Image (cartoon, rainbow, N blue to C red):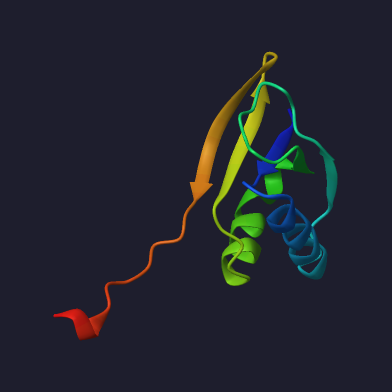
Length: 93
């Protein structure tokens, strides 16, 4: 089973690569599988067992949004997504 992380931009993908490296997570930057829709042509391949560590590292470094896909039987299934949720501005009450 293979797992990839996809970002909307090349800049975020390359920044995520540095974040995962800093966190000691094994990864490899690859061409995004064609069956996954994204504006960026790159993806990061990771071990499925490192999903939680990847989420933690990317969230800590603010590298959002990110989508996680797992290959099963030749198809890619989205198994998670990290999105940025900004808290409401306290001054606008």
